Length: 183
Image 1 (cartoon, rainbow, N blue to C red):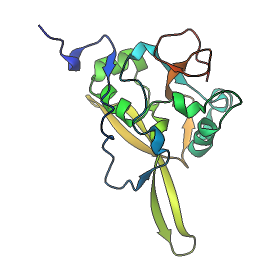
Image 2 (image 1 turned 45 degrees about the vertical axis):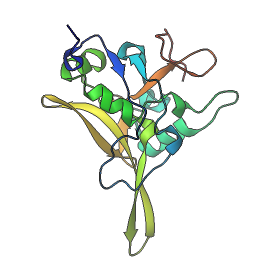
Image 3 (image 1 turned 90 degrees about the vertical axis):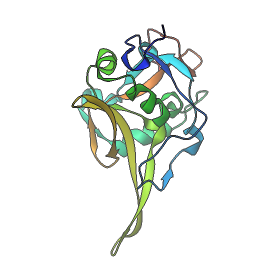
Image 4 (image 1 turned 60 degrees about the vertical axis):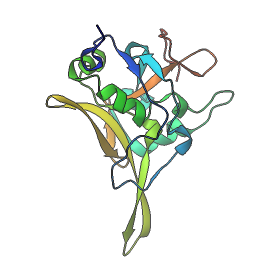
């Protein structure tokens, strides 16, 4: 008797990293394409961490673009924080787990997939060509887990965490559960 992945509450996630994930029709490009197919092929939802920027903890809100720049910045002797974030491929695999599993691990939060920030071009008469950036997030709407997109000029609040692999002591992503999320 096989396990029905759709009803499996154990939290095991298997991600197909072979092909790029499907993007909405309006997407013109991925901001960091080197992360498009990166990440672990198998992990448990319990091994992931929910990360809030220090401003989200103190000031309650932060602009999405400021948070994205924070994730992209490199640190001495460590990779960028973006390398620990999840991407759209992970989002699709997690969404397939269903509402009950999602709520068990993330308690109905909107969780963000910062490795898959995308852009599209907008042309304005006065301002000329501008690139508009969006970040995908996973959430529950009705009886489904869905992937939606947020404009990076919007504010993110204290309940909008990034979904990350936990970091090991060397500063690299780990699929093993740790007590600390060091990003």
